[in-house]
Image 1: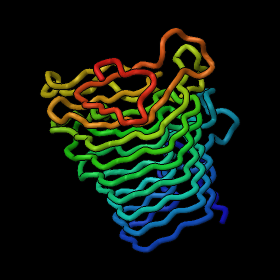
Image 2 (image 1 turned 90 degrees about the horizontal axis):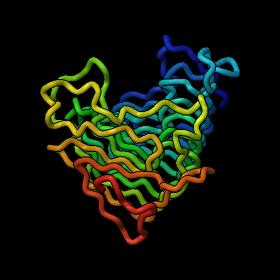
Image 3 (image 1 turned 90 degrees about the vertical axis):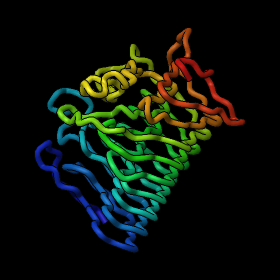
Length: 305
């Protein structure tokens, strides 16, 4: 099937295909072109299988109205299960300007395999506000020129736990942040105090590839993540980690002081891409415990890790 979605526009926020309260659904051999918003969104559904999906989210012209990369198309997430369970995604190829695949609040028992992501933000769990996310596996994934590799985003305005997450056999090609847990992720104008999101039992296994140093990037580089505390309310300012922003990191694990994170890295190897630098990509940890498995880690842990 060739599915021609709407021409990209900021104002037309219509999902290409949304399943709500569905069971036993097979979605296969679909191509979406220039979506106006998210592509495939299972909501409150279970036993969903998505195979052989192709997404291309470009501006209508060769370049965007601002003269940037034609793939700087926000809110064109590829696959986005919410409050859904027993979800299987296989052999998806997604070129877009936002999350490639993202597993949202309330979802559990999700398996994503043989995924190719180019441009955009990468593969994600979150952002999570409320309702736990449990038992998610990403396996055999290639991230080409995305902003992030495997990333978990927890809202500091939220209240949930993310646990039992595995990112395995991931290849990174010129990304901007290799592995990330960001539990101070926020939205401007929404700063109601809460206990935040805790991330535990997360494993990054056999993740290797390159990050691009900031100085080597052109104007089409994806926007930086929200790895800062600029919108924290006064009630949380004292306990917020207020991390610095790293844009060419091997790993950043930044969590709330009252809800520390627990991460295992096993066979993770990250280097700078095509640039001779005397310093390896940095690490940054705040309120996170990082264990190293038998596969080891390169470069060695620094930055409080």
